[in-house]
Length: 139
Image (cartoon, rainbow, N blue to C red; front, side, top):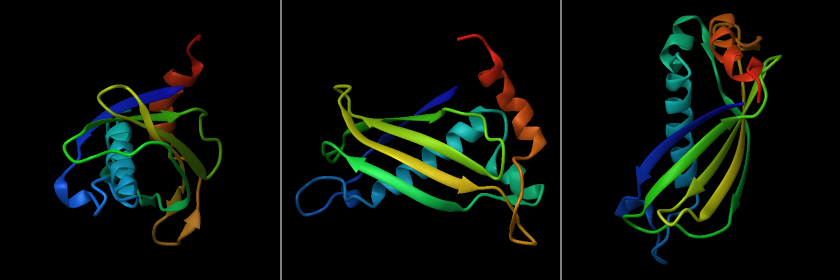
């Protein structure tokens, strides 16, 4: 399993009239965390795009358990629980506050797509090789 951690401080503009993070801002938090996770695995989204592969989101499932508020420092844990074997990759996210309380969980599915043709393709081999170590090592 591949895991990564990102921290984000809640900005005032991300809160609603109730003083909590507006639900759609979590999607941006997840995007930041996925970008960091890809980078920490040894590649970047830009590297993949240079190879003609894009990764559109095709599904998001989100569960809001507790509110995050202005100026909270959030920790976003990102997991790849299984090695992609076809044209899709599933990221799992967990958002925690400074008291280590679980606030939000999400599952985000993206497809690997050939950019010019807009057709699904398998995970690029260059990234698969970088991730193999996380899935082939003993638990």
